[in-house]
Amino acid sequence: MTKSINMEVNIGELKLKNPIMTASGTYGFGREFEEFMDISKLGGIMVKGLTLKPRKGNKAPRIAETPGGMLNSVGLENPGVEYFVKEELPYLKKKGVTVIANISGNTIEEYCKMAEIINDTDCDAVEMNISCPNVKEGGVAFGTDSDVVYKITKEVRKKLDKPFIVKLSPNVTNIKEIAVSAEKGGADCISLINTLLGMAIDINTRRPILRNNVGGLSGPAIKPVALRMVWQVSQVVNIPIIGMGGIMTAEDIIEFLLAGASAVSVGTANFVDPTITMKMLDKLREYLAKNNISDVNKLVGKIKTY
Ligand SMILES: Cc1cc2nc3c(=O)[nH]c(=O)nc-3n(C[C@H](O)[C@H](O)[C@H](O)COP(=O)(O)O)c2cc1C
Image (tube, rainbow, N blue to C red; front, top):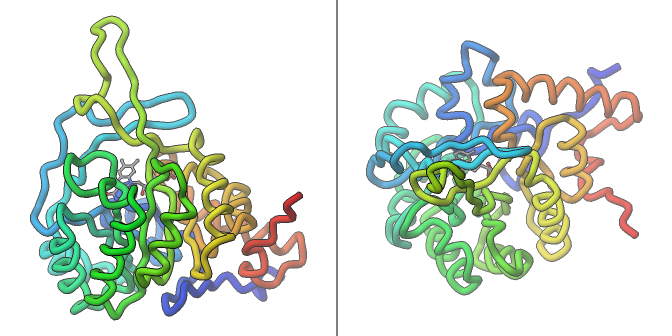
């Protein structure tokens, strides 16, 4: 019975085997999870955030557990885009994985250069991170002003023939305005949310727990905020949305789809159980079968609002 259910999702020209991807920075380059699961069964892997040159990231401690979530200030530690293209991408493609490169830069020129490099590869899509709260320059600075969002999206778009996803920050006053600017700039898809800026303090040392003082909050604590933003954005843009933020169960995924996401990305949950995405996929199928829904796409945006 479950066999006849369609799980495939199209994000514009990007075809996914199912709507469940893994979120950037929480799943490495995929290889790290291979001893636990068949990574080719995922809808896609959004790889660790890449920069033009390799980065060491921020000083430790850079992870702290908080009620219902975690704070991180990793600061985009990564081996650089050239290394990814040479060493990681061919391996993932050979495995049959849909790969989405996640890029960050200090300047618009850096973003453009990276887009050019990835455009010449068989990487499936590019996700532009203009929402990282953990780097001094760039990152979130690009994602909080709608004029800048429009400009950077337009410039990077010119360098890319591949599906282009713009990842938004929740650390803004009006998420709808920012999303509309990304769409006007030429994004094929919006992904949201990145982490919420947060803080934790050790009352004995009176020092912030993170060496960077502040960090990005992720995990179940942020799900209501993420869901609200996906729903709001879905009402003002005509391009698909990839929803993320605190997804821990298949039920959470269904909520995101109903709110208007065409696909989702699972982040912090991978640290709790590295096989959690496959359990979610089975449960999602079960839910569809139980409710006589033949196609997962039929859930998208089907929230019955008051
Ligand atoms: C340790 C860690 C590292 C992350 N690194 C990146 C990154 O490099 N690029 C990016 O766009 N998002 C990064 N994120 C944000 C996640 O991709 C995701 O948007 C966010 O964590 C919300 O989803 P979640 O609550 O399921 O984790 C990171 C998150 C965590 C927890």
